[in-house]
Length: 246
Ligand SMILES: [Zn+2]
Image 1 (cartoon, rainbow, N blue to C red):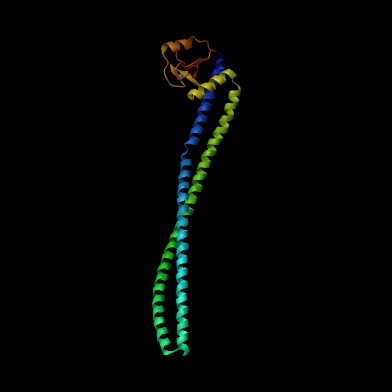
Image 2 (image 1 turned 120 degrees about the horizontal axis):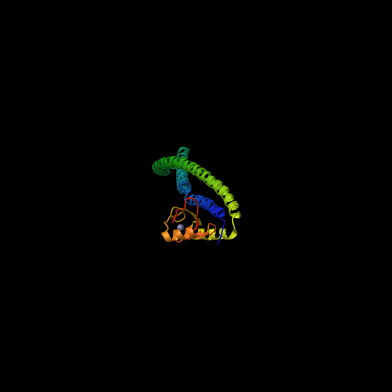
């Protein structure tokens, strides 16, 4: 294949653009800011679960308190009814004794219920404090995630600017190259990652390996518009003033 030396040198600009685009792509895939977002999402999910658990506790304990309140009220109503009967003077002496026993039992029952009610209210109190704590932690986790997303999107935006700008430059440069030369370059780039390299001294700029004397001699003997390839990596070797003499 033949290509004018000035056209061949454009391949180095193309390789530089491709390298920058590859770095941007690599950066996009390995963004620490993305890892931070994923970590913040994990924390947020755990926080949400904790709030749900705390809320369930509060509502369960609230139900317990209400149930005990109702039981205390039932016992109190029964006591009131019994006292009413005793005060009415319309019951017999035997009934008076029975009612008096029942009132003792009811008073003991109410005492037990009121103790339980107090305990349940204390537990409810603690659960409400816990819920408030978990909600605050959830809000904090939401803030951390929002900040992480903002930072990541900022970096992604920077990468996108590079990709758009360099991508447009690449398209323009590629369009100015002969089709067969560009096809060879792209094919080589797909194979090894680098389509063309500058010959620096005796070293291929694509694979960085030093060429032996016979390869250097062949390259030196080739016409300036001959397209030569590196024997090691296959890249198009572009000869500039930096090329060594065999
Ligand atoms: Zn090479």
